Structures are given as structure tokens and as C-alpha cells.
Image 1 (cartoon, one colour):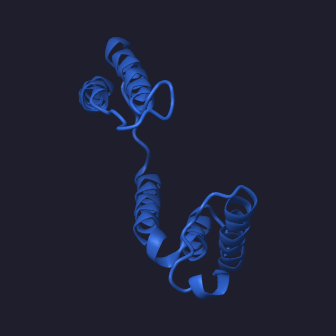
Image 2 (image 1 turned 180 degrees about the vertical axis):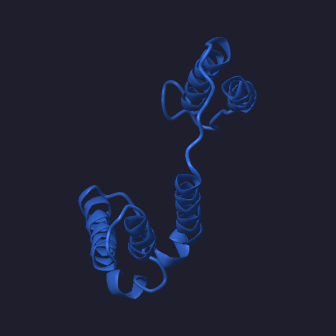
Length: 147
């Protein structure tokens, strides 16, 4: 029953997304399909998936034990903090600070998590910002060094 309730909720979200996405229009046409194609496609797929949840019969849902749910909640809080601090701290520091507790949640030691978080922050920054030319925020502390 919970899948059907969730399916109805997703169907309402998809309907709202299609409603708002339909009105998207660029003042200057820079591509053949325009800016509304991607959101309409995503919400159309969400509609199909939500109808699948509503229409199919499934056995009752067995929820995860409490420790697993606590770890999921902790990961949510860490990622929320990462999103809120991303621009202020910059990609390297925010990724490092998020990678440390995430590494520990997945069973890494303190040392492994610090090395992994710092490696992710620096390595991904070099990959995306320098090699792939994707602009990432450097944060206030690194701007003078990188120019």
C-alpha cells in the first residue's frame, strides 16, 4: 500500500513539473528543442514510473532496521551540509569535509577517510576544473592562490 501512496505522490509531482516545464521558453533560441525538452522528458518518465508503482501489486514492504535508517539520515545531513557550504568553502574543502564522515559511515578508519576525502577533493578538482574545463567554486580561501 505504501508504494501506491508514494506513486500517487510522484504522479502529483510529475503533473506539477509538466505544468511548470511547459511554460519554459528561452528569449533567444539557442538550440532546436529549447529549454523545456529536458524537464518534460524527465517528468514524463516520472509519470510512467509512478503509474507503474500505482498499478502493480507487491508484497508488503519490509523496512530497514533502525541502525541502517540512522546511517541514511546521517548521509542526508552530510550531503545537505555539503550543498549549503559548497560555494562558500569551495569544491576542494567542501568535498574533503563531506568525504571524511561519509568514509567513516562506510567503515573506513579515521586515517583512510581523511586521505580519501582529501584525495577526492583535490583529484576531482583537477579533473573537472583543469582537464575538463568545468568551472568549480574555489572558495574564498583558495581564490588568491589560483587567480
